[in-house]
Length: 79
Image (tube, rainbow, N blue to C red; front, side):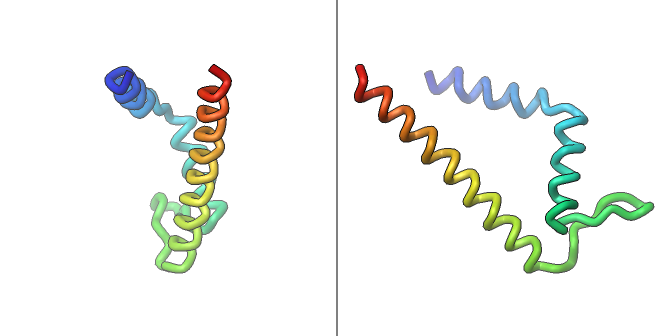
């Protein structure tokens, strides 16, 4: 049901807690996309790091999607 799916997605966004945010910040730091200073977090001025991370991230999301799609197609063929 598309309505339930979108509602579930909204709930996931709403329920994103502080630990999730901390993990995301650490991951972005690890890839050099953001820098932590005594004044807070700042996005790097190195555009190549941002572009590289974006490409890696989108590639991983696409792979997850394609893997999930294969599973659904496999399940559909089994019915």
